[in-house]
Image 1: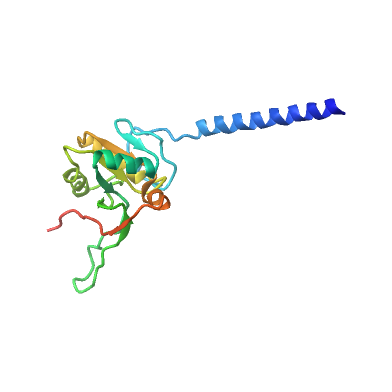
Image 2 (image 1 turned 135 degrees about the horizontal axis):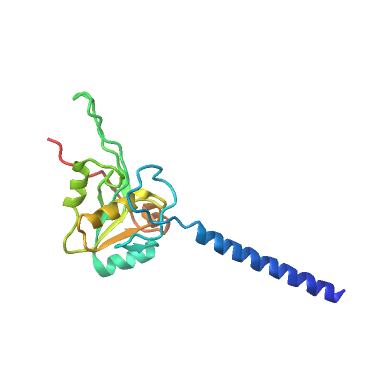
Length: 187
C-alpha cells in the first residue's frame, strides 16, 4: 500500500511538471513577434515585448525610477475623437479629457499605423533632441508601439516604450493629471 501511494505521488509530481513545461512552452510560442511595419488595425491586442532601437519599461515602478534618474519627456498617444469638419460654427465642441501621467503631453492619434502628415509633424515637433522620451498609452495597445517606432524613424535618439500605460500607473497608486489633447495646428 505504501509503495502504491509513493507511486501515485510520483505520477502526480510528473503530471505537474509536465503542465508547467507545457505552460512555459505555450507562453513562449504565444509571444507576439515584432512586426516590420506599423500595426494598422485591431490596436487593442497583445503587443510584442520588444521594439528594436528602443528601451522597453514594463512596470510603473521601473518607470518612476527611470523618471527620477533621467527626467524624460512623457508622451501619451491615446487616441481621441477629432472635432468634426462639418460641425456648425455655432455648435459647442468640448475637447475630450483624459487622466494621464503628470507633466505628460497628450498627442492624441499619433499612434495610428497610417497617419496624415499633420500628425507625423506633430510628433516630430514634440520629440526632444537632448533628453529621453517615454511613449505610452494603455496596456496591450499598439498605438504606443507604433508611436515609439515612428519616433525612432523620425530620429529620436533615446526612445523608451512604457508598456503598462496609464492603467498600470494608476493601479500602482501613482498620481495622475487630467489633460486635453494637443492637436496639429489648423489654420
